[in-house]
Length: 357
Image (cartoon, rainbow, N blue to C red):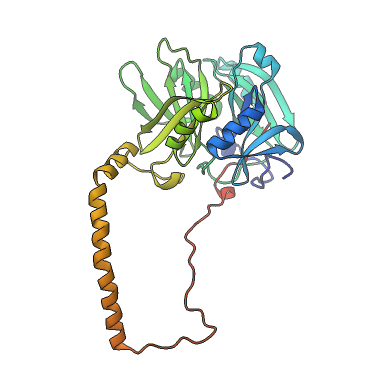
């Protein structure tokens, strides 16, 4: 593979409506890339590959497709007190114009626009509440919709000091719209979800008073089991800070801190094996409770099916034998065919192009 951001999933030109407000790439900036690579590959199931144009830049892959990048946290960022963490690259038709608008709206430019040949142009910004992100203009359009597959990023969550002000900022900058909202309870405020082009992309919530957490974006990767991630995190040197927790819709999440101090989260579906795009109104907890409560009853039903199904098959065979005589199969003729039930969804048809500035 010649470029970690091409992945054979792009067309020749960009469409402003297709890329605006879309999370196109994610990047981990950390203090120990080797240790971080070991942690995330074991935790999420990603594989690791170096970018051939710059071997120091590592990529996390799922199914052979780049999902994110990893690099060493810059020294100037360390001097400013920036901790290890994930940076989201959000699509913009014009990164320079996005930077000017961000400043006009009360944000700040942390790193001036940089052009990377064959990749695109990006600028690192800070919103008015001090959460960091990047506005990125790729040279080519992403292909497919924004639904996530296993190992991809399925949710993006902003913790902020002012939900309405933050949403207004991103609405102007990326065109995001409010989708739905959920009251989190007394003193916690509203969890405001947002999206674009009919797809919900994430949520915004207010940091509780007195909490030491600074405003920041948190990406969620889609995995098969949040429970497994929660159990494995401390064994790999990380720390679970929230979860496993069931959320509306039947899904489950876990928020963690990696061994170098970077916050990360995973999300698993309440439907079978985390199939992206599925919905399930039953909560995971309710589903587990139902399974425990009905385990004996289910076993009894299964046993009953076995007892009744076998005689039925024998009876059917007897009826068939009375109607016709056995016919000897001819040589060379196939008498059965194997049916493969596993379906592999083409990531190229449903995932956005990965672009690393």
